[in-house]
Image (cartoon, rainbow, N blue to C red):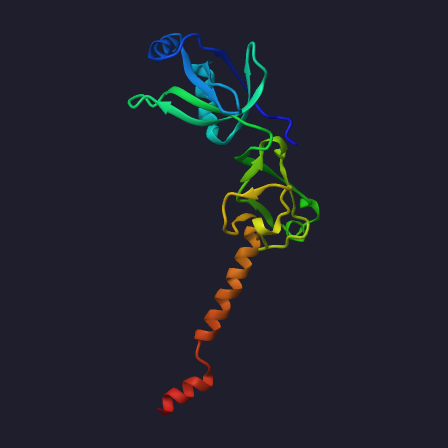
Length: 220
């Protein structure tokens, strides 16, 4: 299971309603609410700069966080919405949902490739092209894999590795139904040029008339 769930630190927001939210923003905080998990809603504040940095890192809505609030037990949460200023496009409020260990969530899990040293295609100078360094999966909150291990030791040049050929951790499944490409081994540029030259020569030879063809043309 993953041991690197990022922490998200917040403080309890005193008071509720628009007045308390406005005050939080004046204090360079972003107001939010934590709900779900069989517990009542908890109003919180998150430092504006901290939240903005997280948002710029990307995939904030599909990242599981360990929420730390003083006076409360740590809890796993996932963001279910970020409200933004319509003019400045800056965060003004966020909604966080508590997760049970059995809750199903969509998360991007990193892919770790192994066996490159044994790949016949790479030994011949081929290049491993990673199409998806992360794969979005439906996972159980209490059993989130740290990574997806993918063996490429049998890939040759021009071989393609799709999601259907990868053994995923138990209890997980891709969010995309189609059989998408995860990686492939492409031919080195030198080999591509040789193949193109050979093809070009073959085509040129087919286009050059033979002596027999020329004689037949003259008789006509």
